Image 1 (cartoon, rainbow over the protein chains, first blue to last red):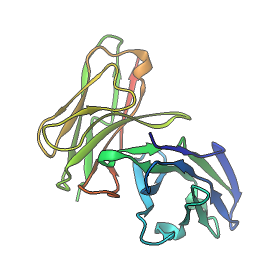
Image 2 (image 1 turned 90 degrees about the horizontal axis):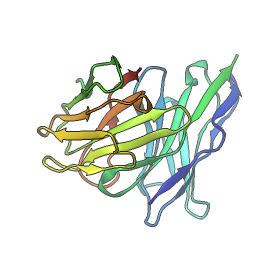
Image 3 (image 1 turned 120 degrees about the vertical axis):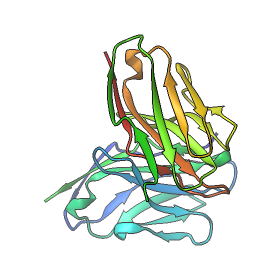
Length: 112
Length: 113
């Protein structure tokens, strides 16, 4: 079965600083990878997805992620954090039937 | 465009009571999913339906049943609620084909006393 590792349940970042959230996956086949964001009391919203078209993927709200097959990684970055980026972020890898295996998530706190 | 709609949004039950969580999508998606979210655990798949007329167990199916009523609707039933089932439940749907993202509802917050 596929799996995802996200280290560090809580991530603090200063407003204006780089946001970096790490995601490593295990997959027996070329993967489809996703990042989702969850704001308080809401469902998950798709930030971006990797489907093998390009290794650098741009998403909404200024986020991007780079797929590195040799490192089995799909880290999420944003050059300059904004207060509105405070949320929980989940990395996911696809399985058969479009099922997703989720990481445990990163709660991002933005410090003014 | 409503997307994925879940009802109710909040519910409190007593141990042993039964309840059905409803989910409907208006995106003509083939696949639908039920997850539970617990602090520090991420999302765990309870059941899914790859297409109308089929359902399969996910990672944590014990204590739950599902019904794919038609292409739009996928319900989750707790026959005899237990405190361990206190959680936030999310329904999602996706289209056919590899790499299709899942679209989520806003969740049902369920407390079992």
